[in-house]
Image (tube, rainbow, N blue to C red; front, side, top):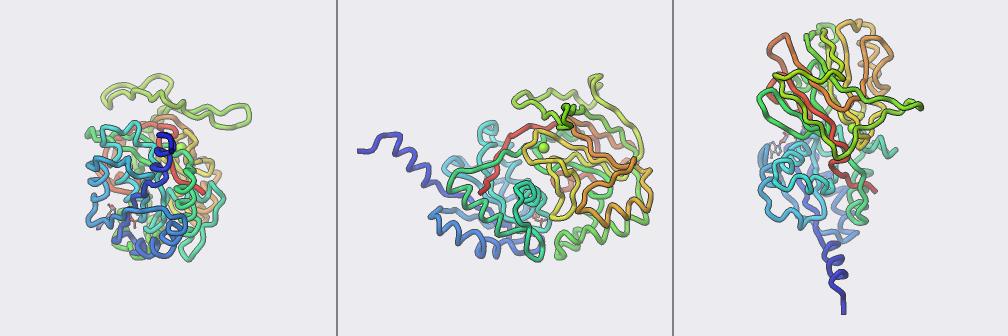
Length: 363
Ligand code: ADP
Ligand code: MG
């Protein structure tokens, strides 16, 4: 006769995966990605799945928010770009059981145009980012299938971000104003080109730069004797002051003209654009990528032509490890702010890193 515990373990391993596929993602390859790469591996490992083809923007988020028995799944899988992952995490964030459910494992299959999180994960694991688009579908499918079969995960930090209008989000990628946000949204109509669409726009901007006057404030994280950044402590989030309130004296404040400010959680923006080379997805650190208006045309060209090598070593560029940040655009008064690559109302925003708040399947 089986004991109660045995039954529980058996039941646990019987749990299906909940797979979201966005058939309308950038390059329209999400369904093929599933059929070609993931489904055969899951069959092989006899992992059951419930598949949801998203029917509209916000579908995954609505489903996650309202699903009464999400715990019947062993994990969630996103087959799309970063937009769908954003929806899934923010759906979880809006649930009353967020503090426990946030750690439900997430699997990533690159079916969209950007795929920043999956690219950063593959880079960190030293896995191949191959194929014509370098998105690494095979390694990704292997991470999901092996991870789900053996229960293997790696921690992922999330940023908790508050906008001036009071809206709060969790973010796995980050929030930005300046050249990246402008090109991301300004090149939406070129989605069919995949992530390359952004470079066409950036190329134009190189010669017609736009500056943003901003007050940038942050709580820096120190480095130890070996030069390693000391991560933010786990389980003790800061109570950030309201926007109308002053920041504590241990924050650094810089007011100036910037081309780019990116509060980022991961290393890559897509398979090639390396923004925070030292970042690991679960390092307990938020990184502020700064490009000041003092950057020269020559430096800009040098940087944009070699994005795969990371930020260049010039005074105008900096990558700062922080625990928390506040970014206040002063002028122009209108612009584009993106959060995980999605446009949100432009204005002040602040946030902090919540170390190891989530988990990703890995092989
Ligand atoms: P990409 O990297 O190609 O932009 P995303 O995953 O970011 O792929 O998806 C783009 C957007 O599509 C997201 O904002 C997502 O909410 C939305 N979306 C999801 N399903 C659908 C659908 N069926 N029709 C239209 N938009 C959708
Ligand atoms: Mg981090």
